[in-house]
Image 1 (spheres, rainbow, N blue to C red):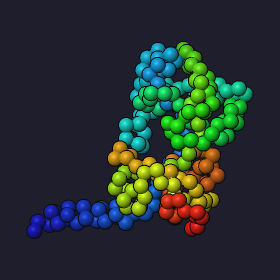
Image 2 (spheres, rainbow, N blue to C red):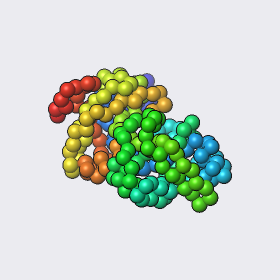
Image 3 (cartoon, one colour):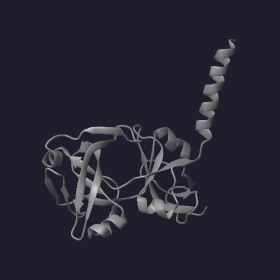
Length: 217
């Protein structure tokens, strides 16, 4: 057999085996950001959202536009807007951010905004008042169906993960989100990242299976 073909086959085999045995999950920080509806984008910027760069999850992107968050007790400027547009606008902040704004914000998964606090969004050209939509995003892991099979979990499972680093920590109640559109990554916010000594190289492992009463390491 041709030597180059052998090398190619062996390379693909090693790659496949490496993917199958890998047990760690990359950890990414999710900074405060806003998702806008088409109507709110028009009101704030006079037109649709415009693409700046791709994010780690397929189809998600950072926009050129930025907004100001105006709460009862404070403001936060220069907040990122993510695309594409959604059916309803949503604001994702950390607990520290919510206190700075003067809001009592529940921990929710993205899209679950019923009964959440409202806020005022402003740009240099427009202003929008949201009656609801502000959340602290619950920690979660994006994964493909293949990843879910490899880790022995399914969509909407709650698991515990051990995150290594300078300040190792076990996170409880981490939601598994499974879709063929997802890349493998755990998302935490800046409060959680700072508390655990996060770096771009941080990884985690699932240490207990779904609905465990106690998460040991």
